[in-house]
Length: 120
Image 1 (tube, rainbow, N blue to C red):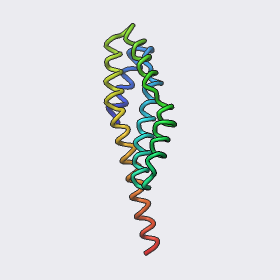
Image 2: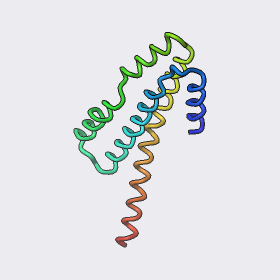
Image 3: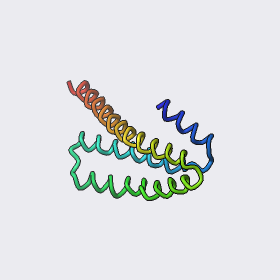
Image 4: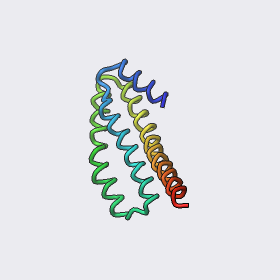
């Protein structure tokens, strides 16, 4: 996470045209999608519900088209920053999804432990 903070700080200091709003929304959405999949694994959520929430709700929150437009606009004035933006987005998005999944599984495991301790 420290590397992420350093990258964001560098981008914001280098150029005000960097679409940090899109980056943050997409990373939050990646974390949310990972959390959904972790919860789905713990609760045996029906596939249609998981896909509906993931695609319909979280997918509408994060949009690839907005990411593309932000990248193109940035590339028109600063090609290198656009490349850095894409690398950060494509690197940290999956990491945030993984973190969301692991967080949901960790919370679920803790909850099962607490319920087991109370019922014993």
